[in-house]
Image 1 (cartoon, rainbow, N blue to C red):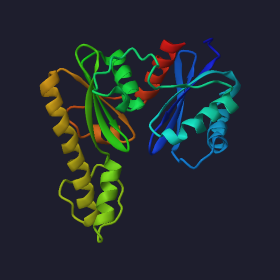
Image 2 (spheres, rainbow, N blue to C red):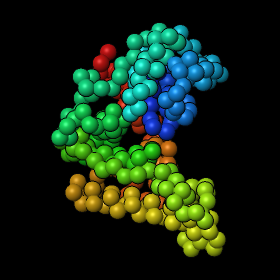
Image 3 (cartoon, rainbow, N blue to C red):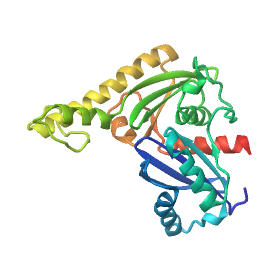
Image 4 (tube, helix red, strand yellow):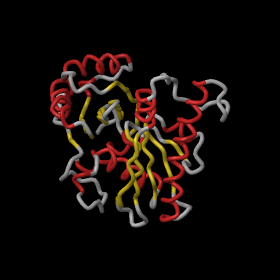
Amino acid sequence: MSHEDLLIVVDVGNTNTVCGVFRGEEFDRDFRFSTDIDRTADEYASLLLPLLNAAELDPARASGVVICSVVPPLNLTFELLSKRYFHQEPLFVEPGVKTGLSIRYENPTEVGADRIVNGLAARELYGAPVVVADFGTATTFDVVNAEGEYAGGVIAPGLGISAEALFSHASRLYQIDLRRPQHLVGRNTAGAMQSGLYYGYVGLVDGILVRLLEELGHDTMVVGTGGEADLIASGSQYIREVNPQLTLLGLKMIYDRNR
């Protein structure tokens, strides 16, 4: 790409879709909007294009589009978006695409595209072994072993859906903001719920991470990403760095490998 060309990278998740823009080799910015399988390509464009224009990023300068999606019904939608508004055939992260990451899953096709992208990005940025804790709709812990291979991982319910389960199944409890409480012992219902959700979830995360580090070695890098990463990392003993753009950086790496 020339310095003026733009690479559009799209991470389609179950809850949110993140669109990132690279200007030449440099990451420029990203935009986040809710994922809705009922939206058309034109409706997604009506959200994205004004944001690009406000940032003085010309869609006509797009030289490539790369997409990882865990929502198959939206694949055609984003393919149409790419062709119609960026005039590019998109590269989807799917079987057959060069990633440079060996997959040791029993059935590699079961691994979500975002997990492969995160594993690649973490290995390239932090070395191996490395663990990625991705806080999205689900919380995933993805392991790249000392040989630099994707070894597998752990999947747990995300913080948001854990909270929703509590609100929906306890008739006298109500929705609250998910944040780190000032006190461990809550002095009212909201405080008690915040403490239980936050510290309970940090306990889940660190309980899994300490066992992974026992297997991989305690010097193993643990990096957090995803929407709740900053919140949980602030209370974790084992997450050493938060990289909000990890998936987007991995998509750029995969695009470069497949050009």
